[in-house]
Length: 99
Image (cartoon, rainbow, N blue to C red):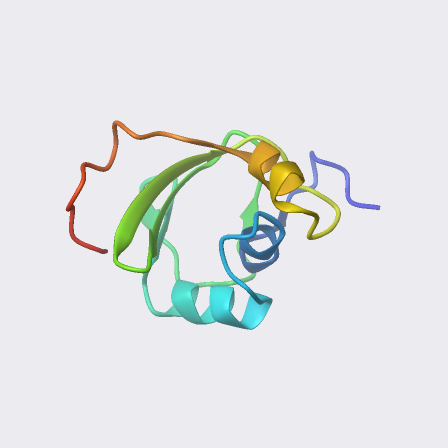
């Protein structure tokens, strides 16, 4: 299947990590400008992400700073999905505006 060195589509990773309920919703958010990948705005759902990449995601009026730890082969249960990333709370303060 997918080797971690190959990477994974951004919209698919966001879906696997359970940040969005569907790939379509993830793709819409990406195209709408709500995602930064490694500090750069990203508007392409097919952009490849790899472990070590940094994401800033605007979801439901909150900004989340994430580091990708793994890719995942499926959309599993929440405990499994939470192992795909590490959240950096120091990057986004409470009440920070959405992207």
